[in-house]
Image (spheres, rainbow, N blue to C red):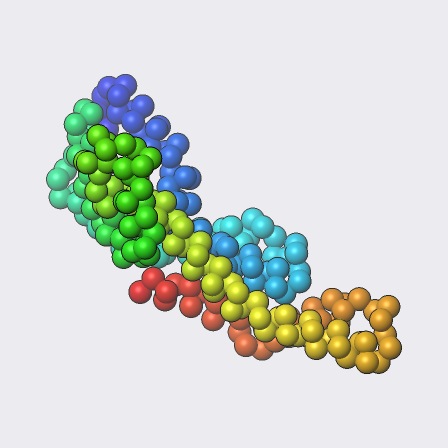
Length: 215
């Protein structure tokens, strides 16, 4: 599929090098990872599950959410039958892939965040460059989307954190009432929090809720 020239190989290597950054900035990875790590902290088990497992879970879920975008982008490439032998073909392929990706970003971006970046272009970029700027440019969509995702992640994390804080307060109050001030509250509260999380099928509901938030 790649022409017999060095440009195609270089372009492929550059594209591959940027994949990790794209996976973090233009997918559901950021929100999913932040929420999952907040839940782990709320449970009080700082090292379990290990970071690599939580990152892997976040990445898998992000790919699952992004599958329609990937399928649409691949369909565009397949329909146009690119050979990837010249700069123009790589540019056209990138533009074709960008259409479904931009639609995904716009759908899940807070309009207020997008409006801020659009309105601030005159101040930051100057009138000359701001005149040609559009809200569908990746330079505005990506930071707006990422900030929107982080905001929603902390909102979800706050709501999930409250029940576990309540358990910590109840356990601490009971221990003080019994005169057991020397007993660390976390020693007692962590088993209760784990029991509640397992009883409510926490992982399943958490993952389902995160995925359905992109419906």
